[in-house]
Length: 79
Image 1 (cartoon, rainbow, N blue to C red):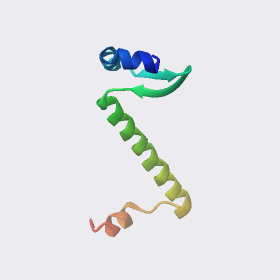
Image 2 (cartoon, one colour):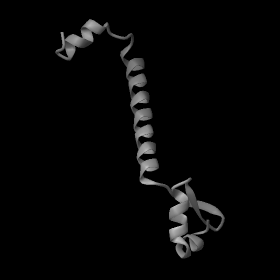
Image 3 (cartoon, helix red, strand yellow):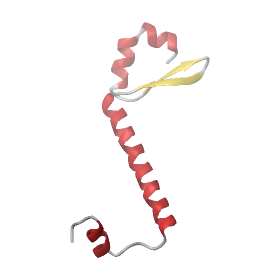
Image 4 (cartoon, rainbow, N blue to C red):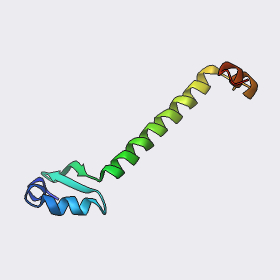
């Protein structure tokens, strides 16, 4: 949907975004997406999870071999 169409038919664009993302274009290029708040929140959570996973993997690579569970529990004060 062009930016002009989105401006003129905002309620239609909003309704359509409940079914799927609505991409707004300017000069034929995507410049924005209209999505539900639920979709946005899920996307942010997925990105944060992916970043956490990448950071954990990088930490394992930097720290060498993994620690035994007993050591981890002791470090966390659970043992």
